[in-house]
Figure 1 (spheres, rainbow, N blue to C red):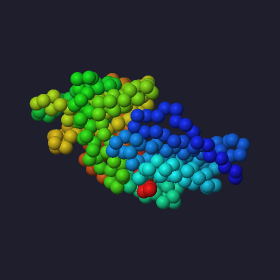
Figure 2: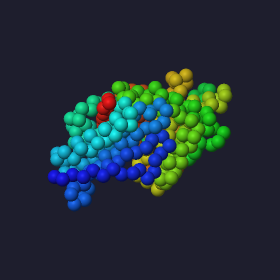
Figure 3: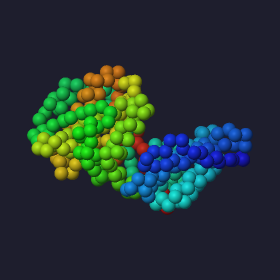
Figure 4: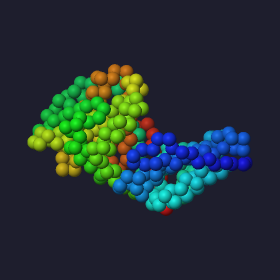
Length: 293
């Protein structure tokens, strides 16, 4: 088969990364597959690239995926990156493909879903109303209010020690500009970012957060983007408290919403216990593969 790879230009680079892309086509120009390489550029992750390779099922096992993979890896190496990550569904064709290309499994993620029709609203109200001495809850939609922006950005370091097993993921460095940019990106695609935070009543600082992205139409499934509590405030049940509040508000404010989705590293036993207690049920697993350059 005559195969032609065409490099594509990303029309919308983000502040923290640039994306490279290649389209594989046959001699008549019929698309056969594609590869996308996100090259991270922000401090803390500027050693990293993330790869996605797709080949039409009817065209697999003809070397197309390997050509795309090799081209993208060469670009990552030329960009001075130390590690390339790729995520695939466990047991999928991509699972065996990445293993055959010399990548190694570094993280297992379990995806879970809460069917909101099954959510016990009264139990959630009791959980949210249960006092947590020294703390209170706040919530907002969209971009963080200006008076909370600094302390909210600082609270993001709660994710710095999130279990990532052997993944060379680096550290995501958050500041107010990045917090606002993330919220703006969600809004630009027509979705709603809903945030619940735990506040230290003694000084008004945010010490924990959970984020939920609701589809713009308020239907289908929403996606949890992250939940974290600063290390010095752990052990008070704040994670479960915030998440229960987020579920309750999603149930009450978006009655047509069907479910909530999230994924958790298998080694993150604390968050897995919270999800289990709140009624989330597993749907599938994904594997994070890494290639060391």
